[in-house]
Length: 391
Image 1 (cartoon, rainbow, N blue to C red):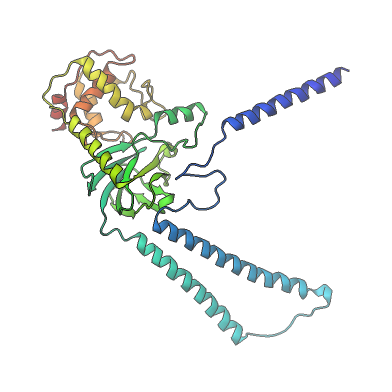
Image 2: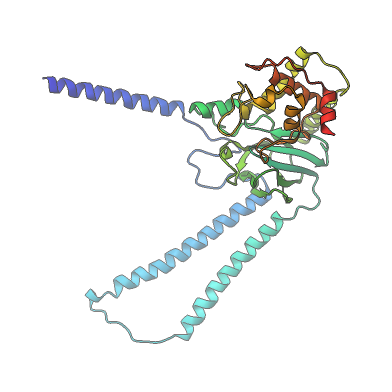
């Protein structure tokens, strides 16, 4: 009786565990992400550029050719093995070379390889033709984020960093992934207009990265000290996702790419809005700010640019150093931290922000970190001091 009771309890516990597992699986269930990965995806992404369509067609035809060759070669081989096996009384034939066979297995593969090579070369040459672009954007890889600068065309002068959304990193740290765009959501997506040729110039500030968006059939290495380029022309508005495709360090999985393709009208409105933001950020560097105002502004700058690595509580993680209690933050010489923010450190692990943030933003975020968490230095950094540190 006791044994039966124990078995029943065991079955009950097992059933509960199975139910909990199924419930957990259901909670983590995801759906296809338009413009991104699909559940159980085995094909290439649905193409939204002419090049991507050509790549998919090329892939399918070459796959068909390879399958036909596989079936023909192995079909003949296995048929010969079964049909002419010794148990059926077959005897080995004794013959030497056959001129006809030699010519056939030389010419036929040559024709097949030449045909595939011609089709592939035409597509690769088209992929490399970055001339006559409507918009030129520089994409710089950092450990671990992307920096975008609009160099030519509508939107020239706009620049920003694109970083993994803080909530996504928190989900990863907690081991609780949520949403169809898990580890693909960013704070500032790259925005481009539909049906315009966009040239992307890639480089990197620290190690080799790679800018890849499968729906565009684009993948280009970003190499420190080198400039590479690629292009795309999106034919359909929407959101399209990619990732850094080069193993670039421990945070490699947290370096997504989000491209938002807008209609021409919506893109013009976005450009106008960004230009207004740029004008608003053009503060007078000689203005003297109060500490509370700098701290309030610095909190926003920190949340938008620093929190994903140093964490909202300033504790850092792994090789990312903590700001809470940091000797450089607490240093009586304010220029120590200012120069770190301006110029970066640790071979690019901490990227330079002098080309991204304004003097006022840098002064604000330094003042914020010096007077937040357990840091109570009472120090205030004015924009004029950042200007002086730049020189």
